[in-house]
Image 1 (cartoon, each protein chain N blue to C red):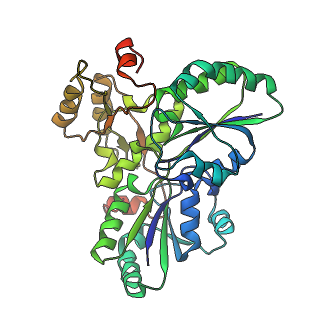
Image 2 (cartoon, chains in turn brown, purple):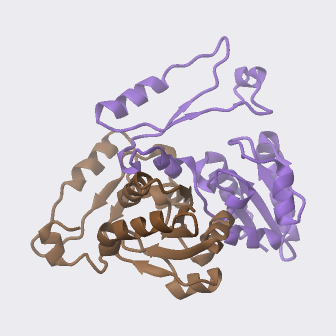
Image 3 (cartoon, helix red, strand yellow):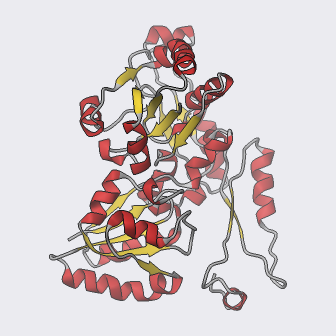
Length: 185
Length: 185
């Protein structure tokens, strides 16, 4: 039994690697994590390519019920494979590193299948990836919550002649103003 | 007619994306650029998967005869597609950006297919990609040529609490000591 954490790349359903697609074909359950990034196509396009059902996993599911799912995987163990699909590359968001560690604790075998991420694909805008400094995130502003601390980091890169990749936090299901104020963002 | 610049990812022949593989199937000539990075499998594994012949392009070919190849492509234009395969992601090396620009000058339609690069896949070692500073290259040392300037860059990252991705220049066909001394490296 293997838990595959598979990067989907940045564009459409066919940006998955051949290795990734072959891994999915061996899986019984397939979860799509879609709250840290947005895919360019709908879930049904994925299901069509895979010939399998895909379960959407929102932030709540990944951070709360995923422990339960991992327990199930650990129990079902020898019988079936599972996949968690991630937009971009699996390790370009903290959540997935955490997921990996939680699976390892349960002695679940994890295989990671890499793909393009904006961290490297940003090179397509003509700037050399070798000339980027620290990556900066801009949180989702609300009427009351507008932190500007990211500007200092961009300036720090600029001062030493480096470009900055600026990631914008996106508004998805759980990312309500209420949750932001509760610190869940 | 399209010139595809296709990232092969970092592992074996099946780390190409489904989009990349489909593009190759439409191509008449397929070049593999292999001097900026090393692929984990031999060329025959690629040819087996593609069902097509792959032409190895060394540094000399890419930097000197590629102009000629691009001229041919521009002439053959309407009839056939071409592919240049690149280990990792197409835009993570300066050469490929240059190639892209040279093709555009000849009014050749270019499509880039991204893939994983060490720039993002480095996250698999457990360090967050958000906490990396400028990427540093270490040149290939010879008995007489041992520049240490890269150490300052690593130190600059370290001082502000950032990790450093250190790329090692690799020894391939053209990378002889003789060429290094001539400045061809």
